[in-house]
Amino acid sequence: MSGFQLNLWCYPWDLADEGIDRVLDRLQGEAGVTGISVATHYHSVDQLRPHADLLPKGVSSRRFRSAGGAQFQPEARHYAATRFRPVVAEWVRKSNPLAAIAEVCAKRGLNLRAWHVCLHGSSTVARWPAGAIKDVFGDASSTWLCPSNPDVRELLRGMIADLSEHYPFEAIELESATFTTDLHVHAHRKAGFDCGPAGDWLRSLCFCESCRQQASQEKINVPAAVAAAREYLDKVLSTGEAMAMPIADLLAEPALAAYADWRCRQVTSLIRLVRSTCCCRLVIQRAGNPLWSGADYAKIADHCDALMPLFYESAPDRLEAVVEQAAGEVGGVDRVELGLYACTPPCSDSTGLVAAVKKAVELGVRSVNVYHYGLIPLRRLEWIRQASRYARREA
Image (cartoon, rainbow, N blue to C red; front, side, top):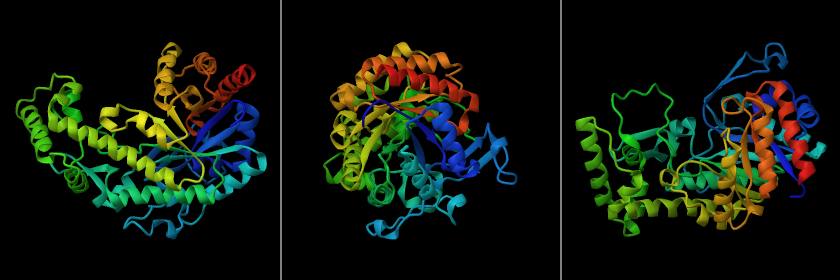
């Protein structure tokens, strides 16, 4: 990379429906971006489209709904090592808009990146339930695939190899290439009591067949970890009283501590596997509590080109600590990129966005992504332009 890069996250359906050239004219002219980061695999979505008046008659309404899945046409040879296959999103099953987007970006000299939501995807879980995360009670997730499952790992490796070989991406950004970062589901959740942060963490742990088998092979006392987790959770479920202890205190249990360390090794090895067949730069989004996700970013840094912390806050004074943490993990600020937010909340005017970019430039960050073209009113493109103009001048 040279100079300051400002990329805008985009959904491919917004580009296809509004017209690829029309959108890119707008983004280069009104927002001053140097590139776009396009979703290549996505979870289910129900999107309110603020500029639906720009859509051709009959294309869509104010809402875009999709069960999610791969936003491109996969090539079969990349998936020979797995029983699983990419679930192609319904809206692209007879087309491949990603190819057209890539062609137009190349003609314009516009930076193109892939934004790949890896293991969070209800359509993929529904099609391949054997790959789902399972909690300590044996209940399968409806939204998240397990990063230790061999077929899941090969599916992700195949998709990244497929994308990086067939499209001219400057980088592929991996989101959610970890264990689950929360207890998110799409159904209307029902619970009459609070388990507390520690209880929720125990509920998030995956004890699927792949995790149990592979952890046992590495001499982890899985039965003891299961017994400890169930003992704590059974007490919460029987009393309705939340666990008061911090999550970190649970690691005083040797079996739980060993299991948590093993989870981190699984995530790191998954990133290493993906890196081995990725033909372009690989950027890892840094998000969520590492105890939940199993992400040891200092070790993951050996297998990626950059970390991208997501700073979706309204207080730029906190940004320095976020960047410094990532720089410490990856070995320098030159390998730190940054994700910022132009949606409300927290971004309610241009001041906060410009201040965040200003602070990032002062700290030495040279690549920023802004969230998100399809979710913001068009007048906010001027906010992005102000931030981009300042950054390029100062950098």
